[in-house]
Length: 383
Image 1 (cartoon, rainbow, N blue to C red):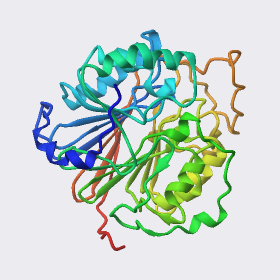
Image 2: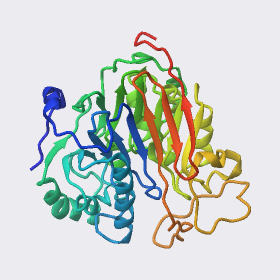
Image 3: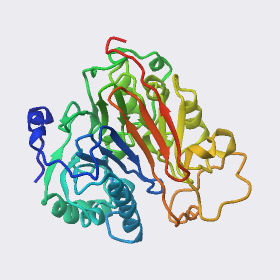
Image 4: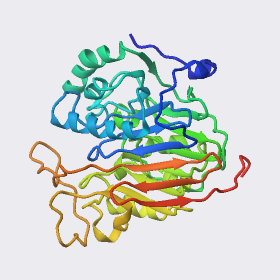
């Protein structure tokens, strides 16, 4: 049975939630951008040891090789964080690259709360069967919550706000730097075709505040919904970290979002051949206040012209060419005849972010150990 719960009414219960045991006392908010080969999976671990996973990677809902692969990669981050359970799992929307590893993951670690936007709006036999037969069984082991814009997820020490869900966005601006001010990028916005009923547009989006540190994660939210969220007023404000939407594809990441957020650091959960097209990369690289863009994969769709230095890229293919493509490649045609992407069966490396309450945060590429620390900015909600 689906239960819609207004999180605002349960904030007081945060102190009663079980806190995961960690291998050492922590003082940081840790964020793991996990390589699920162009799918979605991001793990947040609060200083109290509470955890929230946004999406469970690929697999189409079954327990085939891809689902097992992505569950194992998520578990590697879980192990690094020292977790014994996942307190919340947000499924941003019902596409297989975001929920596909869930069943396998749930067989490996307890998941206490399941958050989603409600029923699937883009009928698909595999998805509908998963929801009817598999998801209903999984959520029976915990609590099922249907998110609404404005809801709060009660994690001690964090202000976790749902800003989009089921095609709707918040109507009232958040409290934070730049929030509630006119968005100058709205004037040049060009809408896409109507996206009502498309699952990407239903994405559960979050903005998380930890002291002076702010991070945005909007799933695969589409351009039209970005406009609804950010225009004519910027209801979110500025952030320090942004998990780039929709794997860096051009149907998301308009300037009304990418430039208005003014993220100091962007994390791109792209695949070798998914996301990172020149149009998107231009919007990302030209965003005000941007210091660095980090990528899970080198994108063949970016080529050398629009990619970032290798030390900011976490994963490679198994058979890496001696010469990287100088020009961006066109995306492959959709459908069953699409050739497979370059294989990546070796170690999968995640990007880890550790944020301090004062706004200082460090990003680490676990492939090569390269880290960079971004100092605190003194900001006020009135700025």
